[in-house]
Picture 1: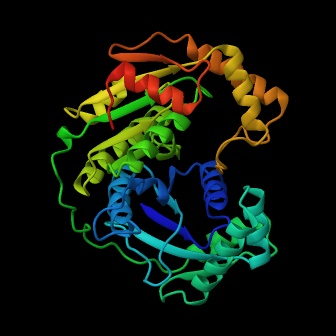
Picture 2: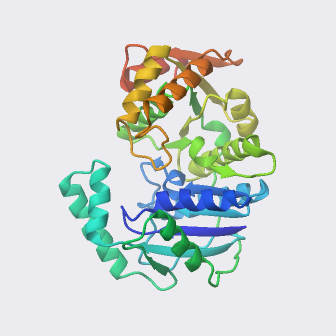
Picture 3: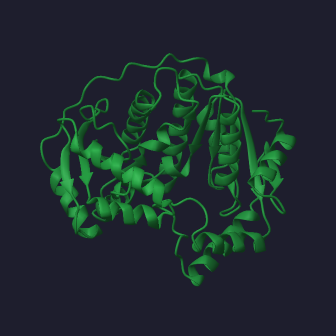
Length: 364
């Protein structure tokens, strides 16, 4: 499997280009997977001696790459931040092309503004990003994106990636693994727009605020794959295997629990199969069809986090209505054995988090 790493300062377009390249390769019939490396390091407080979680993320990436390779992927796109002060990281057992994307400061500033960043945040991010790009360590291949639309930028990146690859190396030194079977997992799912991600994030932040080292994992973000043998089901199983492997990785780095958010199609059966003997508490959120529809409309208007793969942001009324109808159908799916139903009506994420604690005994 070939690993294509896209790094660079905030606002340069790493995630957008990774998705566009994945779509291009998939259209040609290639089995391709993608991951944002930030998704592999959501463990807070940071592990001892690894404040920026570089070691954790690279170890986690080795695990994710091996899982997607076994699932049949031929290319893994990895987007996200990387240290400019060190040579490009290697990924165990894979050929790797490491690209550093460059874009003029004023263009990065404008893109960060479109994400809702304040002027002060934009100025600081652009300043730091420009300094990082100026001192970039040897081994990175620079790709200038000034003046390029997405299609031309995809061509520029693929052309740069076609050069000589760094060869495979041995596995990364393993973290000191504790017994993952003693660290519980809270698995939160629900129909689209029921708020699983927002509620899971609220629970994770509450744990982080008390200094309880806890992992946060998003199954959908770890299941981004196309054309795998076995189709979408194989991608979802690979994602669940990644979640289980990263939970163990987080426990090895000192984590005491993990919170997982997942689409409703990934129910407790998938969780139990992936985690084995690890204690899993499975929760399904519920909302009325009217609430699901209004939340979909809110997302289309720009509410919530800015995610490159969010198909609701900027969606038309017709597209929003289709998502709401599908969510209403998902709501009618029968509960799985062992799944706890938690209503979200009349509550914000903080309130729903409190309901989960009451219903399940989750105490982080």
